[in-house]
Image 1 (cartoon, rainbow, N blue to C red):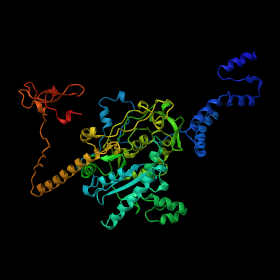
Image 2: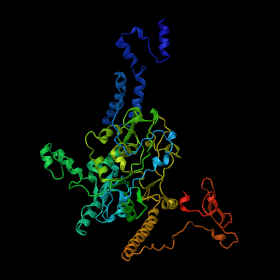
Image 3: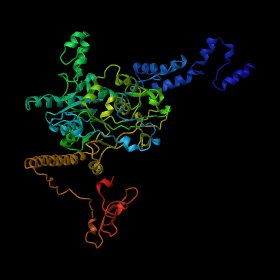
Image 4: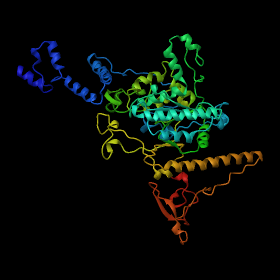
Length: 573
């Protein structure tokens, strides 16, 4: 009988006969690391410790791992199982199931949300009166290639209405980049103050506050929030707070409220209407005038983000709990997904971490009120992989700021292949899930081949650019931006003259411009033929081909056989 017991138990664990042991001894044996259930836990920890070298990192991993082990042992809840916060967004209806939408509701209506009310139907002050008064603060994240960041700053600078905050990765290898940008900022600020009678317009996040940013980690969000603090001058007040705990003394500081909390318009804050968040690998496609015109054509409180407005609802096995230390991201266990239908009050939304936001929303992120959604959500999002794509859009969509969402960040972005599909050695930083083939990916590097795509995108910015890979593309873009700037300047002068003369004429077309219902693009070799060939498109898949330019059966409109006639830009992709 004893042998049978040993054999039966041994089919699950290689254990001796537990009936001969005291309860304490039996428990110790079952939990042993040689043949008990702790063996797998030991192996799991050992695997995690391979990327964690320091004592503090290994202790952090063990502490968070223990939250789940102890939760099981003590029969208590796992982290965030009882997360709840009420969604205060009332302006956007929630549609959780896009496969079964109500009649009359389409995905396009949900996803392509616009926020551009008629100026005649909104209170005075909703729009900026003069676009030339629009002040923009650019927050740029970088880690290397300081000259690329300097070129980006130079390309975007408009005197007295543009500020910049630069966050340089806190890792040691980024030290030279930090030093170069500090030197550049000092030189340009001194020139602006002495020669132009202006003010400081470039700030570098202090080195002691720089964040060591890791792919897929919460540190990407943290770096952005730290940069927002610098934009609002909060570095000054945070340092002051460390020097004194006297609330009365803090409250006496200029730019604070009665409790010593800094105000958004404190004397150390940059003055701006809009904050634009960019990577240093981004570059403007549009002229500065076009960038400013586009932003000013929307309300001052508009927030331009790209959010997938379908609530996330992944399977539990792929939504994991992570911690970050020793410049790496470590997977611990499963993390409860936040979903309204599961009783969490809010949903998580995927969005881009690059955006154009209002001063009010930027301030809410930089200095969130106690017990606000941001204050509560930060504890959760710290443990989400690629947190930057689940933070900013989620915050906006679950708060009253959702009413100001214009769901387009005006950034052209194309993604490369998944890391598990890479030819050659993988970047293991992007393959951190349990399934080794469940990897992340990065944006495609723009080359000269992409110039037509970039020009037709209609976006204000694009990424990513790498001067080492393609050193010429920015030069071509700069030439186009310069032409656009000249064109807009002429247009402004022309309209001013027409207004003075009370005329309504249109600006003359440039030699490369077309105007009309459509354009026939003729194949050069066939121009003299009896039946010249023109650019056309097939009915399916938008394939481009050559067709006879003139046919008797061409319909008067582009429907239903539009592919047999001229092609207009609205009919192309």
